[in-house]
Each structure stands twice: as C-alpha cells, then as structure tokens.
Length: 219
Image (tube, rainbow, N blue to C red; front, side, top):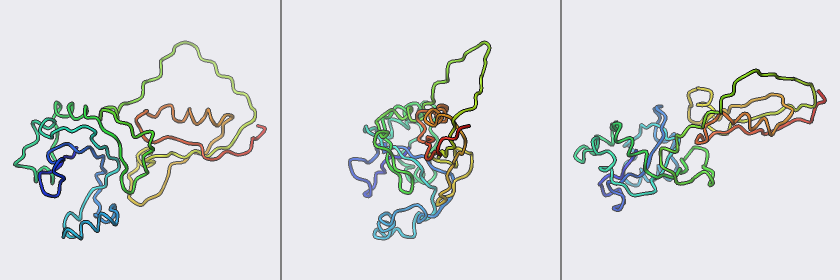
C-alpha cells in the first residue's frame, strides 16, 4: 500500500492519502531496467539522477478510487514522524489494518514494461475482490464410466496470456520474453480452451488461449 508523502513533490490534494497498491517482485534491479525515458528524464531534471538507483520491479498496480487518509487505515503502523523511514523500509500492517485496507475500492492500472490492462477488466472493486479465488466445482459421488472413441481430431497450440513464469513456478527476469505454451490434440478446440481455464481463479489476469489449430485429422 502506498500513500502520498507530505512533501512539495506530492500534489497537495493527495498528501497523506492512500494512493493505491503495488504488486512487486523481490528481485533487485537498477532503476533504468524498468523505467520509461520520461521517468528517467524527470529524475535527471530534478537532480535525482544519482538517487534511488536500486529498486525492485512493480508487476501490477491498483489506484485507490476513494480518498482515504493513511492514518485511518494504518492506524497502528503509521507514524507521521517516521515517514521517511516508512518509505525506505516499509511497515507490516497488522490483521485489523489489513482488513481495512482490503475494503478500499480500487481500479487496476497499467504498469510500464508489463502487459497492458484490458479496459473491460479495469473495474472498480474492493481490493479484497482482486484476490478472490474461484468457487470449487460441486463434488459428485458414485460410479464413473468413460468411453473413448477415435475420430476427427485437431492438433492445437495454446499460449498462456499472463505471467507464464509464475504459472510454472519459475523466477521471472525482466526482459525475458519466454512464454508458457501447450501443444496437444483435441476433438473440440473451443471446448478444450474452456477446460484449460476452468481451474484458474476469476480474479487471475492470466488465461489460456488457443492460437492455432491444424486441419482436421480423420483419427
């Protein structure tokens, strides 16, 4: 959770208010590895070129869509006299503070160097909804019988549109354009695409999409 510092660099109307939330990778990088030229020029023009040169990359971000004072959310962790220390080291929110933070209504926004957000997904929701898991499918009991029949089939290529590194449990290095792909056979490509995504939580940004299918094979 980030908030506006009470300094001249922060717009006056935003000082001491919650600005939003960031999802970061605990991977050390240099500032130029994940900054736009506009951002780097701003650092140079303000005389900060040699400051804050070490960083960790932001992967996703949500902007607060309602004004909330930081003191109302982090009522135990936040101390005005320790503002600079909080900015450098951060502070853990306790359970009651976290519960308040998760109620803030947010909208996901684009992050430089990351896949752009689809407009229809950038809806305003309480922050807790961002991490809401999918419902488990209803359990069924009794005997199961499966019949396999040979017939017209397609070879397909599916690509995971999202953070493929996280999906397969691998560490992501900025600049690596590797993607997760699946090559297999099905007799119904549209149905198979839905089946590939059925276990992914609705709030997750990643989805499988079938990018290419072959001509039908007789068997």
